[in-house]
Image 1 (tube, helix red, strand yellow):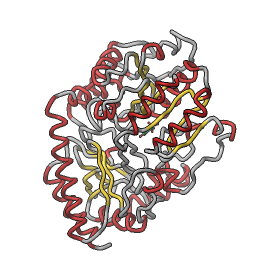
Image 2 (image 1 turned 90 degrees about the vertical axis):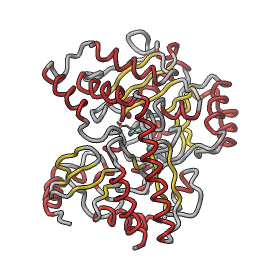
Image 3 (image 1 turned 180 degrees about the horizontal axis):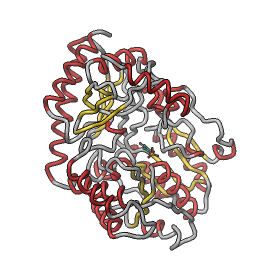
Image 4 (image 1 turned 30 degrees about the vertical axis):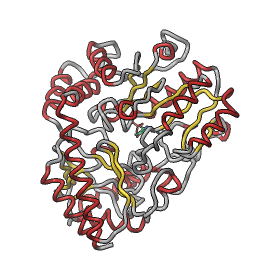
Amino acid sequence: MKRKKSEKLYKKAITLMPGGVNSPVRAFRAVGGNPLFIARAKGSKIYDVDGNEYIDYVLSWGPLILGHAYPTVVKALKKAAERGTSYGAPTSLEIELAGLIKKAFPSIEKIRMVNSGTEATMSAIRVARGFTKRNKVVKFEGCYHGHVDGLLVSAGSGGATFGIPDSLGVPQSYISETIVLPFNDTEAFKNTLKEHWNDIACVIVEPVVGNMGCILPNDNFLKALREETEKYGIVLIFDEVMTGFRVAFGGAQQYYGIKPDLTCLGKVIGGGLPVGAYGGKGEIMSLVAPEGGVYQAGTLSGNPLAVTAGIETLKILSKHATYKKLEKSMKHLEDGLKDAAQRAGVKVKFYRAGTMFCTYFTEAEVVDARTAKTSDIEKFKKFFWSMIEQGIYIAPSQFEAGFISLAHTEKDIEKTVKAAYEAFRKL
Ligand SMILES: *Cc1c(COP(=O)(O)O)cnc(C)c1O
């Protein structure tokens, strides 16, 4: 497989941008070698600048649940662009998207659009602090909530991959307001709340953790988060930036039947354009300016192009058959990958929630950050490059979730399973 043009671009890029990229995991540091530069994408396929074709399981890290360049999304975007790309004033489009989101997420009474998942979590925490007049935030080890200062403690993929749990440039005083607990440890959670509830504004969690692979909540964990936070008047925030419209139409909260106070969204609701949103109980969201005293603003928030892509995406997703089709493809891939590993004699653990999934090279049940780290990274690296060589594009890190889209065909999945068998066999 030729990668000459990608290599040439990478050499140029590293002189201009830190690591040659605009987001760290893209640089392929976790798997060694150079990143592929992408020229275009359509449906389930992406094409690099050297003309190689890949079946894409990264999907821009989750947003493209319909596949790349979905015709009605592209058509709507072209029309929207001709009407102007930004007005900095309200539009009817924003009302339409808010309505579509509310229908899928009954816990959201009021919503505010922002430009990224990071902005959504940062803002949700500010509102929670404003509402409770308390300062501390509880988060879970390995959960990633964007690059918010106070949350860059034990923050999943980037950190886990590079072995740096924290970031330079984050004052110790910010971190001192963050309490980090192990995911799925209900006892530790209960004890912490019992002791510190009086200082705790909110608990933020990825209800299914997609930023250290794919880790499912155990039976009572989310329920305990809900009951305990309610008991102490603490705001429960579900960070559904990845899981929203992905684990189910109504996100992990629908799938697990738990109603958080606030929800953060992003990724899918932007249909591949930069977007984020946070919303929840009217009583809490009414504190956001200009209704209330919690300041939060954005020049491009509710951008007509981003909102248009979101509306078109959610319209397709709200059709009854969509998730059935996604589920069928995902089950096909799950069965195929498990079977391929077994035939090749490689011990793996496979997890998935809706259409997000991860294969770990370990024999241990993966339930938290500690057990995720038992995965054999050397094996993953070999597996990754073997898949790339065979035209299958998976995330360049063990600690990222994989995704499928509506565009993935049975043929795509069969090709993927075949490639995975070859890759497993060579380990
Ligand atoms: C991707 C992600 C974010 C951050 O979103 P950005 O748009 O990259 O800022 C936050 N939380 C979760 C759970 C995510 O998966």
